[in-house]
Length: 60
Image 1 (cartoon, rainbow, N blue to C red):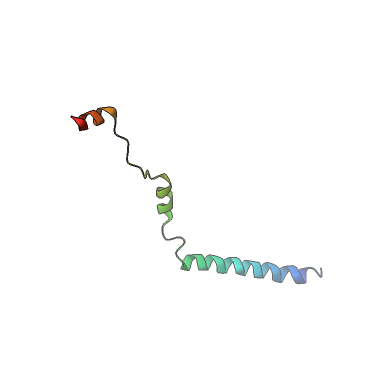
Image 2: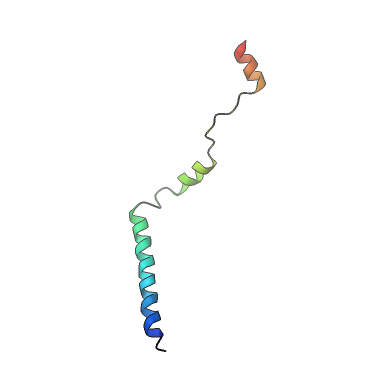
């Protein structure tokens, strides 16, 4: 039972640290654009390659 004197305050301190980290992330804007990162991951950065018929039409 003596270990409870150490574990209870330690658990409370860790919970408070987690809460403070969450509040800091809210304040710093970590949750502002939740869809942006998902769309940037699947966005195609390169333009599509022209097909052979488009290449031939461009030379004519």
